Length: 168
Image (tube, rainbow, N blue to C red; front, side):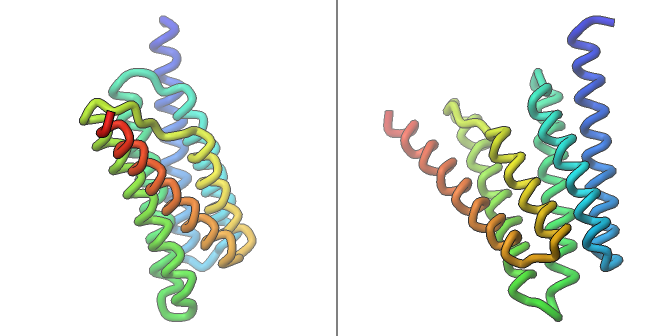
């Protein structure tokens, strides 16, 4: 087996782990087990950081981004759903974090489609996954609001990068 094939298998394995972990985290959130959700989210986040580091080629990069968006969408939507009645502020924080993450991803995708050199950062992904895991593990709304702020700031930075490159 060649080195690129082994790397592809490694990334594929990490993406499967990430998606399954996101599914377990979502299930645990909906079952009111924040600690179990946090542990699953942490495992999934570690797998997603690894997959981003090793993903090469258009197919693996595309699948990596899709898995990351699925991770965000499933877990944050479940948090918003579960807290909508008892703690609306937490639900809002989850939705703001979700929207900010999707906007940042859109700006990267659209900018790259236009030929701009805009990339997602592995550090940013690790930070966002870590903040989500910390929010679930501790049950603290503060970590979720921190994630929301980081997500919105990331979207603004990506938009400004595209704007700057469009003027050159």
